[in-house]
Amino acid sequence: MPKAKVTFQDIGVSVTVPAGTRLIEVSEKVGAGITYGCREGECCTCLTKVVSGGEFLAPPSILEDQVLKDNLAPRGHRLACQAQIIGGEIVVKPA
Amino acid sequence: MAAAAITDNAVEIAPGVHWVGALDPHLRSFDIILKTANGTSYNSYVVRGNNGVAIIDTVKENFADDFFRRLESVARYEEITTIVLNHLEPDHSGALPELLRRAPQARVYLSSRAQMMLKALLKPSGEKPPEYIPVTTDDTVDLGGRTLRFLHTPYLHWPDTQCTYLEEEGLLFTGDIFGCHFCDNRLFNDTVGDFRFSFEYYYAHIMRPFREYVLDAIALIEPLEIKLIAPAHGPVLRHKPRDYVHRYRELATPRLFNEARSEKTLVVFYLSAYGNTRRMAEALAAGAESLSGVRVSLYDLEGGEADIFTDLVEEADGLAFGSPTINADAVKPVWDLLSSLTTVNVKGKLGAAFGSYGWSGEAVRLIEDRLRGLKLRVPVEGLRVKLVPDASELEACRGLGEQLARHLTGRLEHRELEFSQLQAAPA
Image: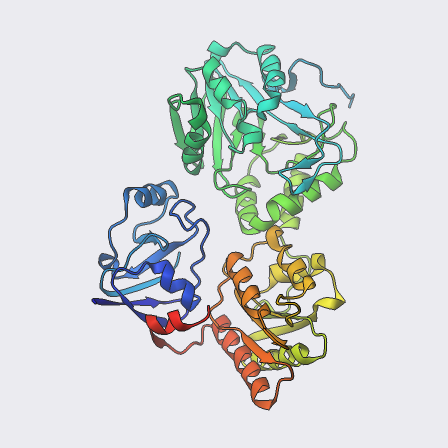
């Protein structure tokens, strides 16, 4: 199975994960500072800054795009409950 | 000043500006969480300009008749060009669908974050959303000789909240900010009964969790020339309105000088039936203290009350909770405190749990789950010790304290993990 590496900059932890994993599944387990509300891509609580490797996350859905826009999220930000890791190396931290 | 009681008509609060809200004197509980000893009011306002009329907020749906009757006493629906929504909670937007039916030509001005809420609110009516314009700080609407200027003041207490300033009158419509649940038909702060308790109670329950946003909003509001503050609940503040702005600044500022402000602070709360969890707490505290830049406080939850501890929680950077397990659960004082934290902002604080147990030891995991639910980060797995901690277990407690201190001070060594290792963890 293809692997990816995601680094949570705020707690200094890198995790090797199978492709297809969502950020939320990893960040909660390692106790990163990304916090969650609805977990359904609506509330924007889990807004996450993608420091590098944004191209290794599956593109946002129409819903995620809309929520990011409505919440005035800067470029390079994603919802951790929605963003799916597809490969490569990604570095993230709480927004 | 003379006390002119509210009648069925609108009440003029400034030249060409009328209160057209509604009184709800018999309400005794608001949004389930707030007590309302003498009810509340839903304040709505009409501003008349040379080229149009603006409505600032509406009222709770059940009180729409009062609102429309007062509105009709000062304006015709076809004159309404502008509807400003400072806050879309149903107690202020309940009459909005009907207002839009009666004044379909009106343009709606609201904050960016209110757009989705507007659509959700109008969903049941099945009607097409009105023309709405998202606005932010310094956007204006010209009513003809009268200018409404917007201030972006989010999270007071919803993401959508904003204020609207009527420049020519120095009049600030603030939504829930500076509001309170206090119902008095004499309307103005210099004529109503003593509402100071209600003002502070409202701040403590509604605004306090958003302290940082309060300070941002106050920074926008303080430079304004303010002759009158017109909030969405409670008295209209015409006498010394700036005092209420100052009071908000005071309330949002820590009461005592923080001696440890250059250091990170860790508060360790614990309960202990036989001294075992206490010994763990002491070892954890000693471990955290062994790193420079961290100041640790140790509190036995049996020796205080949730209200007081809430203040400590608000100020702390990190929180560790120690509880024995009794009947498969953490003990009540821990839950009392952990269910009292909705009035303060704990999002992103560092959290951890530990405790001694005799048999099954569920308390630590349950506390960790609650901490995550409160949006704390819990990066270090908690520690459970069966009955009496021995020297190596106390050393592990010291280690937990050190790890927490490293997290607080950003002195972590980089770790590489496999996802499968995480899945095996009992997090």
